[in-house]
Image 1 (spheres, rainbow, N blue to C red):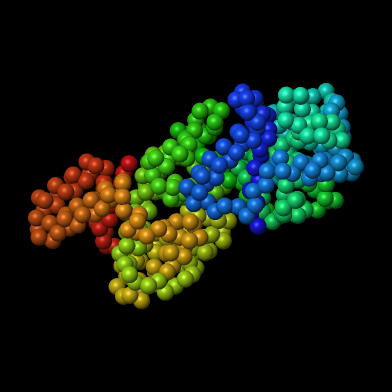
Image 2: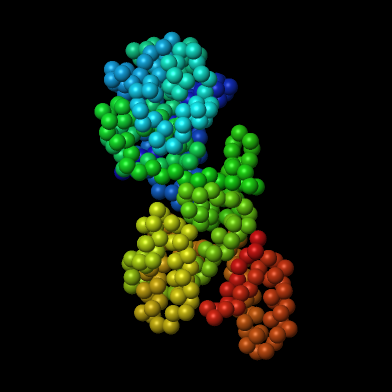
Length: 394
């Protein structure tokens, strides 16, 4: 069961709604839909459940009440705070010492806190802010408790895999662990944590706050979503990834090569329905997608060398099975090369074929002219034992 929760209330949302003179639901619904549309364009499967904070206020209030009863949280000046000292394992996930944790939390050390590291579970709402009635007065939840409450409601006290960006490891995930373990009597919160690396643009982390950002909508005006997906899979999920026009162009060229191999396999029926052993070994090694994509490249080379329908059928089946797990090359090759920027691919294929014919007829002047014409358009022709291939350089 895959749960992807939506934070549909926080201070930034409140401020945006107030500035626009609308309810917070108008802001969150619009951006949630845009987010879902972007994920779909990247081929990301929808979650089984998509809970929202505003739908789980009773669960959140119940969780906070249980933590207070258990001696892990306390009320102070209309706030409820988690008592970090009640959980000796605090900081284990991120491996930080206390000074780092306080600095990393980037929060005001309020006078009502027992410890500077204590974090908010509930805070009061002003009359002009969204709020819910609670045992501690009208207010709204802190960010961390929302996730723990929704996880428990939909996945139980211990969940298998918890994912998120590496920037959330502290303080968000550290706080989730502390409150959830204490809430559930010491039970493990998540068996596995998967923290993905961040995207870099021009050598710096993408961040909305600095304007160093590329929107998916802008990318989709340049390339199909599958190209962007390939780029994201080309680095190991835990590593940072540099986003450039060059890597987009290279991914497009690589996908063209895969689809061209599938096109070359033609009407041969796929006979293998399982990915190759080497491909699965790569994915089972902490989702090593770069190595898995390297195995796909090996299959493409084998497809271009295959001589019998039996070989072709086996390779085609493996290629499609590998692609299904990665969410790649499931389109019909004719559709992939069928319009817009793909008309150029068909034209380039035709020119490459003309060059090959010229070379076969020993018309090297024509062959060189076609090669130079393509080079001027940023197309490199590669002659190898596997056959003739071309790729874009930018």
